[in-house]
Length: 90
Image (cartoon, rainbow, N blue to C red):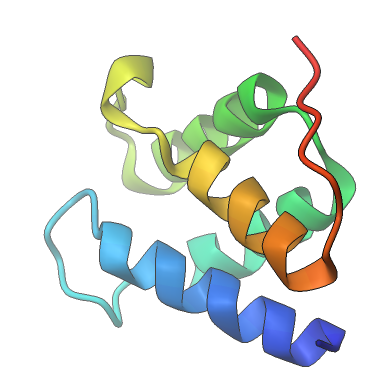
């Protein structure tokens, strides 16, 4: 699967998350930033902090870490698409 198809899968995963209940189409800026972070990071904890920072900055609302397993879902989707063995760093 190429990068465009990978990004489409990641976009759909993020749209389904809809943490602030504003509708699937309300997160274009955040989704673009998060996808960049997914391609740069492979540690789910570091990615979670990056995601929280993106959403908190843009929505000015705090997201509790335990409410968001999205980083694992995004990395898992990316690894499955690229057929990368699953070995997460702690």
